[in-house]
Length: 101
Image 1 (cartoon, rainbow, N blue to C red):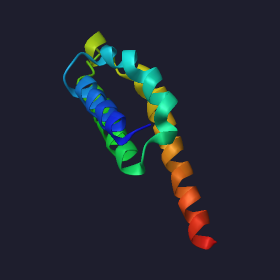
Image 2 (image 1 turned 60 degrees about the vertical axis):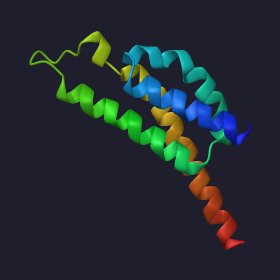
Image 3 (image 1 turned 180 degrees about the horizontal axis):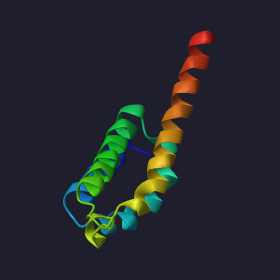
């Protein structure tokens, strides 16, 4: 994947995470997951931070009854967050192995 496509994907991700209703991010998740292996760690780090922020917002907006409004609910993002964390872990392990060689 070219750097240009990676950058466009990152900007689309950021727009989806911060500007449009959270559920709209589901539309680009499959594209992101398919291409995680091509993304550099700095990009994955930003994506992880942005999704983590959504989870923090969700907790802040949770009602006294423990429920979250539909637009604030980001539980559907958990699989991509876990995939990003796993890919970052793999990149760190690969880098560590390369340094030991």
